[in-house]
Each structure stands twice: as C-alpha cells, then as structure tokens.
Image 1 (tube, rainbow, N blue to C red):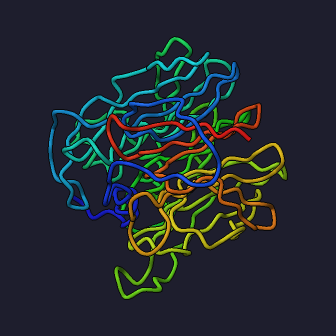
Image 2: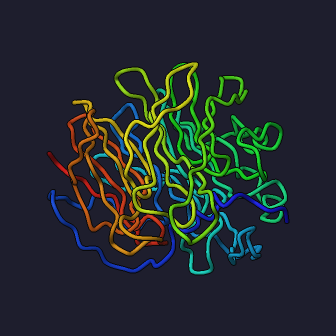
Amino acid sequence: MKTVRVASIALSGIGFLTLAGSAFAQSPYEVVMSGLDNPRGLAFAPNGALYVAEAGRGGPGPCLVSPIGEPRCAGRTGAISRLWMGQQSRVLGGLESHALPDGSSASGPNDISFQGVGGAYITMGLGGDEEWKAALGATAAGKVIKMAASGRWKVVADILHHEVTHNPAGGAVDSNPFGVLAEPGGRLVVDAGGNSLSSVAANGRVETLAVFPTKPNPTPVGPPQVEAVPTAVARGSDGALYVGQLTGFPFVQGLASIYRLMPGHDPVVHCGGFKAIMDLAFGADGSLYVVENATGGLFFAPNTGQLSRVAPDCSRQIVLSGLNRPTAVAVGADGAVYVTNHGVTAGAGQVLKITP
C-alpha cells in the first residue's frame, strides 16, 4: 500500500476518545433527528426538507488495515436521510462505507448540497489512493454522485482520478472528497485528503481552484509540518468562497483557519485561531456559523465540540458548546440553525435545531 498524506490521519482522528453523552451550554435546542450512523453534511432542499449525509457504519468486509494502520471494515451502510414535515425517513441507502470494527469513524457519504429540485450532489469519502479503494472493493468512493428525487443516483465526477493525474498539492496521492457546494455554474468540492478545492463542470470535468498550504507544527509532537486538511466550502454575500480547515496531526488548538478565496487569487486567511473546523454556513445577516469537531489542547477531547457565530470582523460568539463530535451546520429559511451531534458514532447521531 502506498504511503498517504497525514491528512487522512486527521479525518480518521475525529473518532479518537469517542464517549457517549454531551453537556450543552448556551442556546436552547431540540433534537429533530436521531439514530443516525455517523452523520456528516446537512443541506436544505428547495422545498425546505432537511437532508443529512450518513457515512454509515462499515459492514461485514472486506476487513483490512488502512493506509494509516487502522482496522477498517467495508460495507454498504452509507445513506441519506430526510426531515420533512416533522418526520424523519431514510431516502437512500446501500451506499459505500468503511469504518472501525465498532462502526465508528466511518467514511462514506460526507456531504450533500442541492442545485434545484432533484439535484442533490453527494461527496463519497475514501481517505487513500486507488490501491486502497480497490482493496475495499469500492466503486463510488472518491467520487461525487448526483441523487435524483426518486433516490436513484449516478456518478458525476471523479475527484480521486483528478488527484491521481494532477496531484495539486504534491506528495503522496490521497483523496477524500468532503465538502461540496452546488451552484448554477457547477459544483465546488473540497478534497480533505488532497488539500485542495476543485470545481466540477456540468460534463464532470474537474479543475483545481486552490491548494492549501501546510503549517509549521508549533509542538514537539508529530511531523514538522501540519497538513491543511480543508473540509468545508461556503459562498459569502461578497461573492468570495470561504473554506474551513481541520488541520492534521497533532490537531493543535488555534492552528486552523478560515480561508477566503476570490477568483484568480490564492486563498488568504480570513479568520484564524480555530482547532478543528468541519463545516461552515452563512446566516441571512452575514454571520458565518462554524462547527468545530473539538476544542482545546491536542487531539480530540470528548464533548468539547462547539458551534460558533463569527462576525465579518472575526469576533466570535459561542452558540452551543459541549457537543460530541459535531460535523455539520445548516441555516434554515426561518433563521433556525441546525447542527449535528455524535457525528462519528453509529446509531447515536443526532441533528439539533437551535431557534433564534
């Protein structure tokens, strides 16, 4: 198996120290979806239904050791669930997934974004190269699929192939399509393994828009340089793209940033001082909601995830803290904010609603 970037270690590492239970603070909330398998991205359809990508819980195999030394078992337990008229239902199942033997820290459907009715675009995670994909017996991993209103889906872009043939950030080949943003002119895809942001045209052509740099490791733990590990992309009212990053091992508090990207320019740091950003979403007032998988210290202490509201001047307000591995955020038309909880566990995932 070829060596992969330590970016893969970062997204696998969000499963470290997973414990049940959460201790919330700040804004009142209600649980609107539950029993989810490793919930990841959230998105509203044009009709107002809320969809969540479930990375699944792996399956019966093949079971093998991943490129970063983890035991992983593959299966077809990835899914898409929907909240509509107060009812939760699974609208698509049987998608590829691989996870630790207990079903935690799964890789599968990572994010979802809508462009019109029946135009749901879903990133399929991988965390490795073509050899790893073949060992898993996977076909859709490392790609973007489009789900119709009927639940039928098809592959529309191959992010892994772009990483293999172009390798925008250099180094070992490693692809893990994570965040996706569907827009009228095409799709934007964040490759957390490849440390890049790409555009996907209607014909499936993939083009690199930006590469995110490594950062010096300020600790004596881990490699001298820390991988960028971009995870999420959102479009601001100023027309710019905003990209959040998790950063790689050893997951240092304050090292992660939100980047701002204008066409034809390299990404620049917009706001810094974060630890483990998993998702971004803009509110109607221009505030940027930021989900961090954990906060404080090194690695991922349990029940330290939080949702913050970041103003244009980068000042922050904690909206909800004490979350256990939150992974996604979405803002409803009525201003209500939705965030996932227990995002790296099987069967315990939730979506919480915070009403302003």
